[in-house]
Amino acid sequence: MNLAVPTVLPFLFRLASDPQVPVQSGLLDLLVSTAGFSEPIDGRNEAVVRWFGSDSDHPEREQFRAVFTENASVVVQTLAAHGLRTTLDVSRTHPQRLFTDERERQYAIAAVRALGGDPAGREENGRFHSLHYESRPDGP
Figure 1 (cartoon, rainbow, N blue to C red):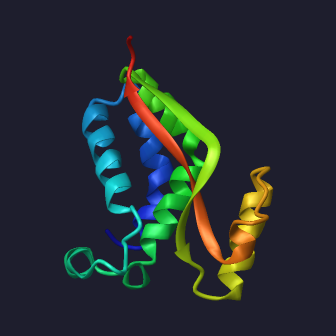
Figure 2: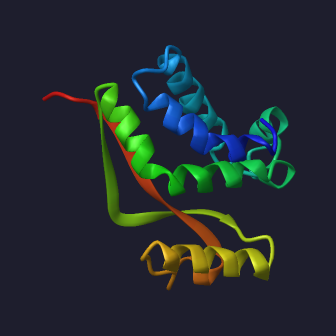
C-alpha cells in the first residue's frame, strides 16, 4: 500500500459496483484485501508490529479507513450486488488509537460532527472511534 491508494479508492469503488466492468469480481477482492490491510495495528503487540509496521509508520491506513467511511453507501451497494447484506451497529463505538496531536483531534471531531455524530465522550477524549459494519450472505 502507498499514499496514492486512498486517492484512487473512490474510483475503484465505483468500478467494482458496475456490473458492466469485466474485472468487477477482481476489484471486489482487491477492495476487501485493502480494507483488511487498513485495520488499526495494536502497538502493544510486538509480533504484529514487526509484520505490518505501526500505524505511525503507515499513515495511509487511517486515510484508507476515512475513504471507506466516506464511501460507505457505495461499498454497501457493491456488496449487496454480490449477495451480501450489510448492517451497521450504532449501539456503540469501538475505541481506536490515540490522536497524534491536537490538529488530528480537531480534524476527527469536525469529521464526526459533519457526519451527524456526537464526539462527546469519544473523539473529544482523545481517541478515534469507529462503528461496526458487518456484511453477511443474504439468507436465513
